[in-house]
Image (cartoon, rainbow, N blue to C red):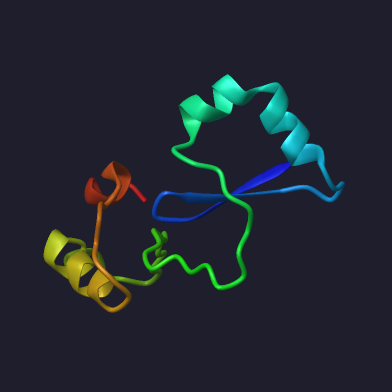
Length: 92
């Protein structure tokens, strides 16, 4: 069984062997109920409107390593959520 993050609050559970997911859910119902708000079968028209992505930018001069610059870069693809500590400290 494989679980993949789709974005927002959604994950996709999949398995090559049919019926395995249903059996796992039935056997561990309390655990699944505590972890997931709801479980529904896949639906082809389903779309996730928001996703988190990591953006790696190489070759940016150290003089441009600041929040304002990172926010502008993030604005090209969405909204900046966070810059990791190693980047802020100019370690990486």
